[in-house]
Image: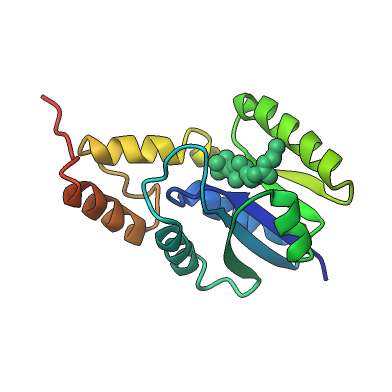
Length: 167
Ligand code: PNS
């Protein structure tokens, strides 16, 4: 039984992330989605909110578990007995950062093997930061994130009075 970890900030989860989660079936029998509690950028959603959103989004997928983590990814991977780290690649622009991160993770834990899965074409231009910006300025992200996430984004920006309408 091969266990893989799919780490990220998931602030918030998009249909691009879900595409990678579905594709992970090809390389892992069990997938742990690891949600970084304190990413470098101040997250919009708390780690509890992000974990709940991802759990709802993957509720139909029996091979997937969702857990928060803090600290080094390789330590989390070891803790959940995962030797495979899955990352999604959308375009060449992702490559440099991912290449550096995978080599550093290998240096920290040589047993870790990073496997890159290529996103389906409709998601190549999709990112969590674009999603937040679109909702912040009153645009629709329907069909780009799970419906529950779209609702929570609107609620979050409404509660903070941060929705900005252009022109
Ligand atoms: O969704 P993201 O923000 O691109 O995910 C980045 C993530 C969470 C995979 C990365 O920041 C990470 O692994 N952070 C944990 C800290 C760590 O292990 N750093 C050393 C990696 S070079």
